[in-house]
Length: 409
Image: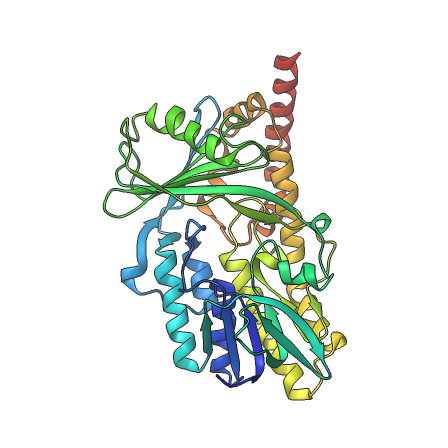
């Protein structure tokens, strides 16, 4: 392998692979390092993404990689009150995440990217006007590049070694998932979300039906043991409701952190750009990061192209990337973070009361008619600028808080 490139990318997940594909297609001499021996392993994400988001990214997913299509959601409160959201048309898909990543890798390699698998990068250090990528293998020589994109995921170990990051910059949920072979009594074309402190403190659990009769299940939590919570969710809310058999055949995934953006750190440096989970570009309300992270990867590549064209890839030039992605998404992340803190911060009685207030309401009908998976904060803000919807939302939240408070007293 050659030892000098325009662009080096660390991390072979969707964000890194999408960046390498765009960079190579635009003529940048690109290398990508992935610490695991194969693309697509291990898998953490549930692989649920909006159709609108895929179109915005310019991606066409082969039919063989689509594992389900969905038009809405069924929401379950702690005491199993139910709300239905039905868009009336397909708005999202689930994908074979491993196959999707391998598909991106094939496209990227076909466009000219040099893929280096089974090689963990232990450091990035400046070397004159270049950067030096330091592989962990003692038999591998350093690789030089002009610009590096850190797409390593969370926690960003490289940034820690470069003293560009510390744990206080982030907060994180802990997620865990599994696949089950059979599921019963569900509505076709609808994902299911389960709320409650006993189920998933500070977040929610999910069931995503798959073609062929199986499902992806999982949860994320602010506290507690995710494995124990998953076992409880399966036992109490899925087996207990008859959706899973008494002894479900299940393949579990490893627990994994889901970063939540706090907004008080940089995502660029001299010749360095940070994308995806490493930059905490994840939706606080759902924990999904495919659309946000890959969109920011495109902005990082555009910034790198402009910098290389001008011959200046210093810190001031790299700052353009942060301006771009913050302009596009920082308000979104703040709004969604506020929604998560308010709605998912309720006690179980408050969540039940909120479900009661929303059931059959004009606000719920409006949300169903105009679903927005990718830019939820802007959709909520737009709805609240409508005085009637604002009053409906304020009433629902106030009644929920009040009822929960009175019952607790």
